[in-house]
Amino acid sequence: EGNHGELRVVKPLHQLRMSWQRAGWSAPSTLQIRLLPTRQGGTTISFHQEKLKDLYAREQMKAHWEQVLHRLMEASDGFGREENARE
Image 1 (cartoon, rainbow, N blue to C red):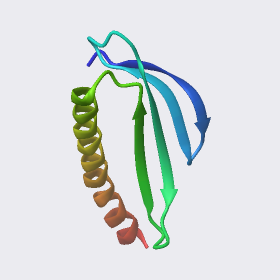
Image 2 (cartoon, rainbow, N blue to C red):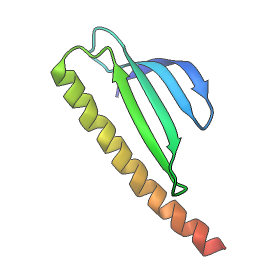
Image 3 (cartoon, rainbow, N blue to C red):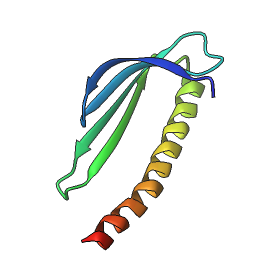
């Protein structure tokens, strides 16, 4: 899609922090992805993006990351069933 970036912080199973730029953007943003454990034994995925150009870019990226989370949830749903079937 023409997006690019550079990893700045990598904390395996906890956090990624990177520069992130979409095709057509004049400057990169800072993207942080965190994996947060829940009390129920699951994981919350948190996206935080800074240095976005304006409100339109914020809304656009919010929608983008919500779609990413939706696809991850769909993909992980099948994973849980496969694991349970093997036990």
